[in-house]
Amino acid sequence: MRWRLLTAAWMLAILVGSLLPPGLGGRGGPGWHLLGYAVLVVLMATWQPPLASASLAWAYGALMEGLQWLVRYRDAQVEDLVANAAAVAVGLLIWAVVMRRRR
Image 1 (cartoon, one colour):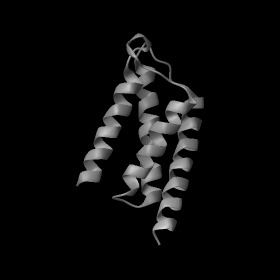
Image 2 (spheres, one colour):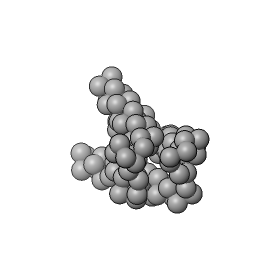
Image 3 (cartoon, one colour):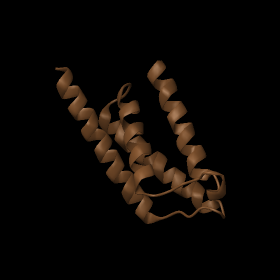
Image 4 (spheres, helix red, strand yellow):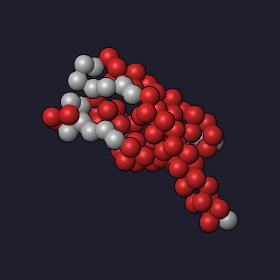
């Protein structure tokens, strides 16, 4: 239950960060995508299969891009979807390394 709450809180942080106007702290860039979606995969993988976690995390990123497309002060970009996919792959790699060390 604790991991699910942490996941929900992280998803809320991504939502807020994705939709804030730039003047109020909304930021973009590959580093933010890497942090946001790699951590999301790791959190989700604590309570569901890693590949399902990766798929859901990327889909959530695509949803954020869609929401940004609807907001006039943010831009939806294909490059961000690619950055999200790379971040998801990094998250899976981190998860695999952690699980391997636990054995």
